[in-house]
Image (cartoon, rainbow, N blue to C red):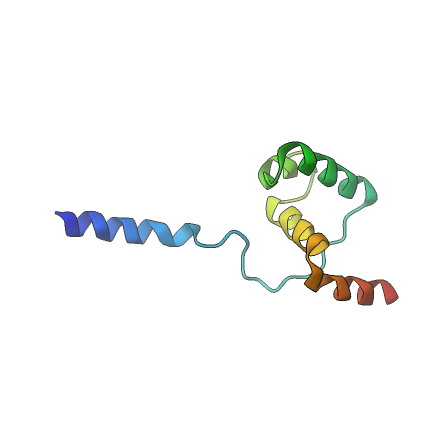
Length: 86
């Protein structure tokens, strides 16, 4: 009986293993109004991307989270500079 319970637990845990999908990331362009709203909402509610996405029509929580990560990670700073040069 314990074997069956353990087997069910391992099957269920695989779906929640990734926060952000592993699809290759492309830069997400936001309007100034969207950026401002994201920054203000993040200050109020933290990393509740679903809640923030509900305030921005046409944007998914995953897009907003990617935008936030790309804006705040040092490794993306060089890519942002290159994109602005084009």
